[in-house]
Length: 107
Figure 1 (tube, rainbow, N blue to C red):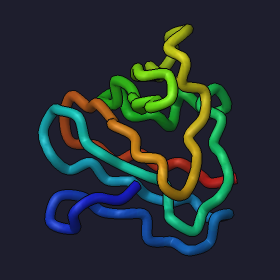
Figure 2 (tube, rainbow, N blue to C red):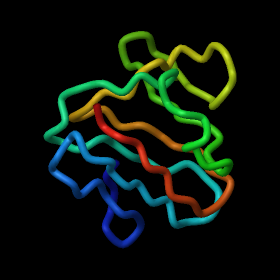
Figure 3 (cartoon, rainbow, N blue to C red):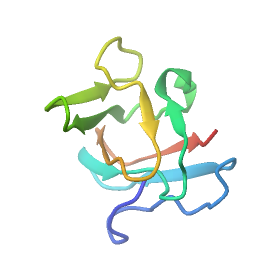
Figure 4 (cartoon, rainbow, N blue to C red):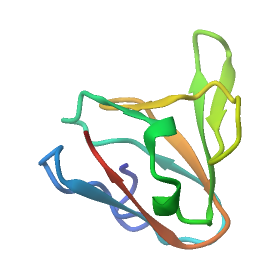
């Protein structure tokens, strides 16, 4: 996911089959992220290996402008409405309790 270079490390591997590193190096809070602009696929959140999700990651939120509300995903919790991360121009808010690195392989 991508944000200002002085705040975050953006996805940098152009190969969608490679694991892509996402570093969240600031203290607790919400941080805007998106998948690489060249990635056009989707990541099914339910298919993520729970062992690869840092305990600092509390969830991912996305504002659905058509519905006029937020959809969210919380690791291990049912409901929330957000089931996939979509490439290109979708911006997500990642909530963390502290600095961490989350590696998500792109299918």
